[in-house]
Length: 71
Image 1 (cartoon, rainbow, N blue to C red):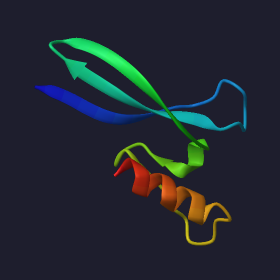
Image 2 (tube, helix red, strand yellow; image 1 turned 120 degrees about the horizontal axis):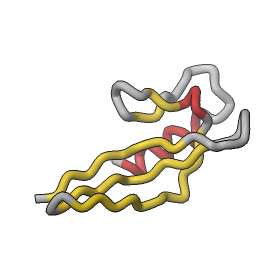
Image 3 (spheres, helix red, strand yellow; image 1 turned 90 degrees about the vertical axis):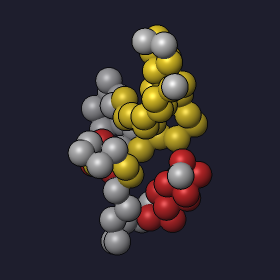
Image 4 (cartoon, rainbow, N blue to C red; image 1 turned 180 degrees about the vertical axis):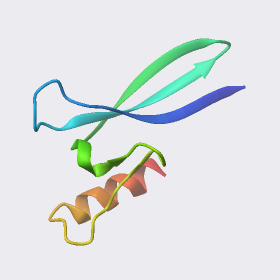
């Protein structure tokens, strides 16, 4: 049985977008699979492991589409 988690890797450059990736664990081996989705650190909820779609954000549509694709 495999475990799949969505994770966020922040950028090493300040105020730049980080990358969303999947962490797959199968038979105690860990693999990281990158996605084409990039978000800012304040758009990621670490506890819930989801994208935060703020009501007044100009990226609301893009973030909602990313969340829909991930789901």
